[in-house]
Length: 159
Length: 103
Image 1 (cartoon, chains in turn yellow, orange):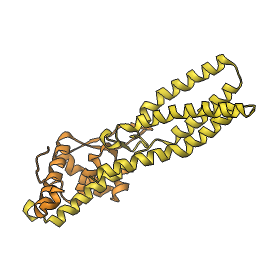
Image 2 (cartoon, helix red, strand yellow; image 1 turned 180 degrees about the vertical axis):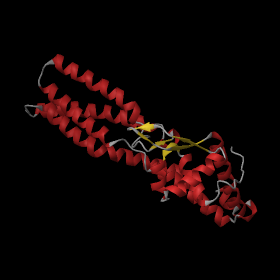
Image 3 (spheres, one colour; image 1 turned 120 degrees about the horizontal axis):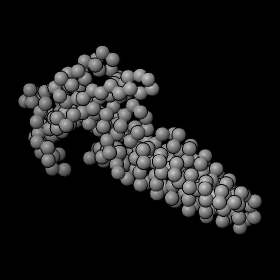
Image 4 (tube, chains in turn green, blue; image 1 turned 60 degrees about the vertical axis):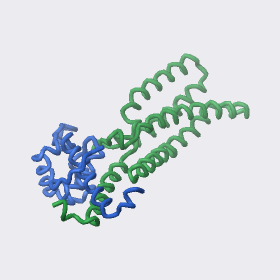
């Protein structure tokens, strides 16, 4: 049968193979609830910090860190947006989880910088203000980060 | 480097589409495959059965939300056959266009 397959047919079959891979790449993402949960937790942590009870801030930070540490390993790799498909690790790329964790760490620094700026400006609740701004960045920017990852995976698939 | 081997069982377009999608996934839900490939339930079942009989696909039926779900995944043999088939297709293309193969 192989001899009956023309180069045009073989090209069409290879294009179908690429489409199959791209269909899976489209599914690389984090569940929406992760971004919303992270944003709500971020604001809650900011509000708690502005209450100026060190023990409460420490406890809230520990709870936030523990919850995030238990959830992130399962979803931050971008392979399980839905329960209908598990994307292979080499297709999703190993960098996705590091990008998400690195992004969260960067946003932590951004919150501190924003809170210091708001405090210097005389704001009554500087950490809350900074955390609300960062929460908006999380909800709007998180999906954009994963869209960028998908474009990278699609480029790799096209090679 | 995967050895090129043209696989007649995988080559038909519907089966190739199913296997290509499963090759990029650990597993896929039956409904996901049906929706993405725009197949009817019966057409997808038939193709999956053929692939399962050949030892290329494993079908699991895990219980989730009190319902049985059908999941399909490529077996190691299926993955090897798919990679060999893709290599064979590339050979056909490159033999017709050697300059393209070198690029």
